[in-house]
Length: 514
Image (tube, rainbow, N blue to C red; front, side, top):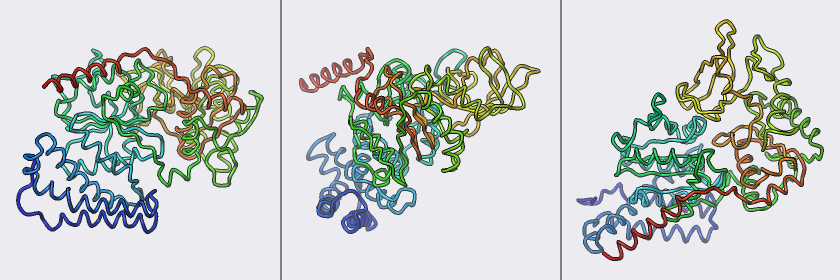
């Protein structure tokens, strides 16, 4: 790639905008850089933009010839990227939805594009560190370069969230790979690859080894793959521990975002999630504007009663949350007084005690209006394990009921015959594992020591980060402390990291011998 002819005057607008952008940081602290550091950074950027960068752009062929390939192309790519990202940063600074773009995010986009030269890159970080902002900036950059990009996520809920965050269409991985349920195959593969130059997969911690295998088979050789996810969350339900293995082997380029955005620093949900992830107890001091609360209670039956009151009466009355759609109870286990099974029975009795029609299945009852969850993949119906919906109709005359699911493309109405209802469970309360990839306006998490087998730091961290606006922990202080201290991650017998390390060493040895 090279640029011929005189440099257009408009090119000088980009560095000028960048200088103004970082000067604004110095003057008003828009970014999280102290004034002196911000000034130094602005000066350094100015020197880069007016010096090496434009020399590289204008004299790309000469530089490439002098330092050799692929370093000349790499330098040119970096130069163009810095200019474009500076422009994007300035544009995003003026957006109401994204009032700031942290320095780490700018660097992340630059590194993603440069690492795109090797085909694959990982972007990881906790909540509030700028993963979504980085993706938005990257999409702007890719559009400027007229590069075809696909956005995907493991579940419909995660794909819907990705679409909302980016303003671009996102698909489930199964839909992207054109899964065919009749023969359990994917239509996109090495013989029929995806027609995209760049693929972004969000919530990658949920992807198991088999789905990752089919994704890699469907990628054309010249395409680039960006994997985005939080490695500190729970691993996939299916086999493997792909994201952790890829990061552990260090054979795949990765960028970890660590700095919290200013907006994120104002949320106790995000701040406490990061505290817990670092092994520190959350700050539970009650404040008028707080979005995070811990209600201490030793008696499990009393914990159950508080959870019911919060869902049915207290949160709707004070904060105007809707019990059926806004509030989600997340419990570590199914059993016990605050387990998923009992809580679902109690919440159904409180929130939907009667309806125009209902169907009885052994010891459980499903009613019109009930919140339900699909618990296994059903490719014929297009619904998957963990999808949440609401029962909209029950027809006893033909033994069917209809459920409305919220998908990335809009509402999806799915019909079930009564003999298929073992695929549905009540979802007023669900396990933390089932909540992966979802976000809810309000999350309520009961914590008691009877659940000690599953009281782990990554489980509590995953549960808290499901909350968008409000998070309430209810239970025993000892159970909370137990979960924060327990950083043991369930061991999974995988060989992906070891195999990649061996391949990386073999490749390095081959290049050295050449």
